[in-house]
Image (cartoon, rainbow, N blue to C red):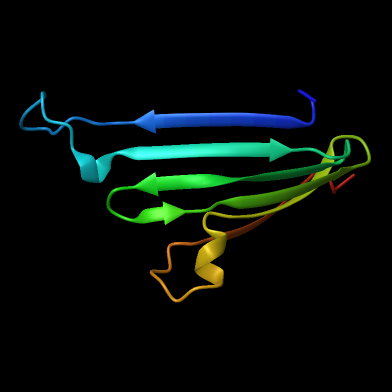
Length: 101
């Protein structure tokens, strides 16, 4: 199972510049991610991301590997933005590696 599912989390809490004992809640970032690889050539990455200024975001990425060292990947920084009418902070990325030869 460890080669099929990977979990990761992180909490970043920066201090206020003027007072090093004060934690700035708006700049705090929390994220938890999971990578699932149901078959060897397919990877699905998703998770939850929170920032005090922008709220919750849900990144999503899918990559498909083929041949030797080649892959196609499609990902976004917030899949929910594409389906809701909230602040547009999402991006869409399509990547290819090793397709030239």
